[in-house]
Length: 242
Image (cartoon, rainbow, N blue to C red; front, side, top):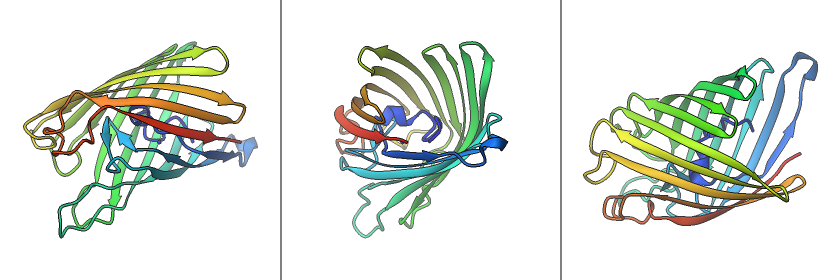
């Protein structure tokens, strides 16, 4: 939720898809730029709804320097249902810088830094992460780390695994599972760890891509802020690129 680091592969946990446009600039120098604009039926990040179960408009801009270095920014509407009297967070904006490449044929890696900024609320919800992943054919193993996660909940680790299948008729199937490991109890009610998962089916019609995803976690409504944000749900998205 551009290059493959838009939401740092974690957008796969949300089943996020975007309507995208892209154009190359300064091709002789190897520099290319792309922009994306999209909509999702529910923006879920690591299995948890960021929009109170509602649709979100999303978009971003990415630069690829042609030598493995990339940077970009990405934004989405959010709705954290703040308590009465509190200003509601309106949107999230991410800034990232990374480096990707190949170790050998079929083995690729990706490392980088991402800063998550939240706008509209009077609470300090910003945080940062470093991340890394290695892909062997269709299997990707990754890890993200934050020294102080969202809403000041301490250190956080996110190991995850993904596998993609190419299906007939330009269809694809993506599987994802991640472990959210907190140094302190506080992000969830009485829990310091939870699992998230997603199953995403995609279909391409030339430049148009459609997707449907099942996204969920292993935590109950009572543990998830007393809301249904973590319950399994079906998401839909569309992507158009040129």
